[in-house]
Length: 412
Image (cartoon, rainbow, N blue to C red; front, side, top):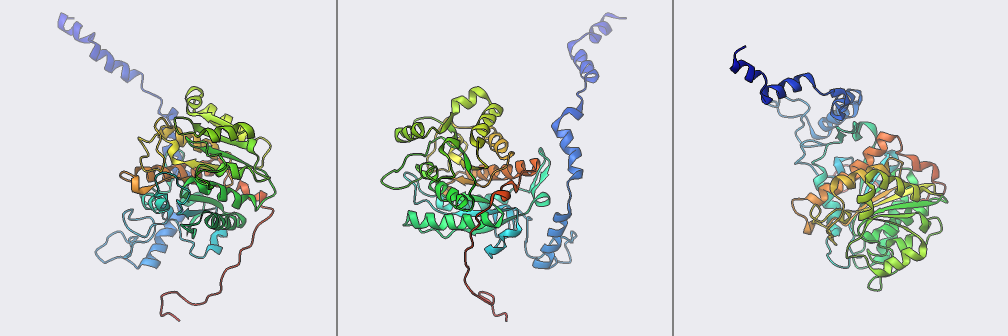
């Protein structure tokens, strides 16, 4: 062999290519490969059903349209930029007695009367619903299609009273108790964090069973009053006053920084609640943190409620919130923690403190949407959606008004 041929045969570049050819990775060990194979096992009947429904409700498309599933009027998921948005473009339960027919029900709670700094979370439900149109119901990595594997509706917004905390709290509890009593899982979109108390109260009054709480936040939110009222810094003081919501089963994850009032720390110490700081999570890792939170929240109770404050995520990712705090969760950490907690089954959840007036490019609302769909996906994937139904032993019954006909219509 000539010298030039010998040297080419032993150059690092050629050896590198040779090694890559002989050490090709086993694709079957990759999550991406497995997810690709698993997709074929997810049914598609409801997507086909939605297309037929869209043609019935929105008329068939123009003759020039080749795709005959496209209607004249936008209905359902497509196109993502059009339509009147519900959460994830799920059916609107205008008649709220129909929520009983759905596995989960989204409730907007447009209330920021408990805000002590930056208002605007009353527009949170609108902001989250609007950007949720960007999502599809399918998640490639976990192999879940919410449209095919569960039922979901949007019941619209609770009628809150802007100038009155207590009347708004009563309205919120009434709405949540109605949804929970129906058997549907209540998913609340706030609103400031003061709604945590009336949301949990709405569930607690429908059951004699005990409820634990996993609360993701940078702030402890457990002092008795703030500015002489029950504000967004006080929900867990009042929630854990209820006989079936033990303080020892309140687990707060991500607490820390320079915005935790000492009044709250004193109450947490007196009531022996559980706080996992952001530093704790960083040292233990996501899996161990979720394991510890679940162990403490579920200890001796029958159900667990999830409260997710969007400001638990570092403010660089969520500028549109009422009380931004640096040093919070990275988005991947937050989503993983919420999913792992939800996988065990929850009796309800709230997503709070999204404030669209302070948001940038809808990124805060987008992340809030992702928390909700990841929670639903985790429960579907683990077969725990509906786990709460067995504990509804004191359902409420709320009367409705009498009306016949069609509103704003000449139809007989």
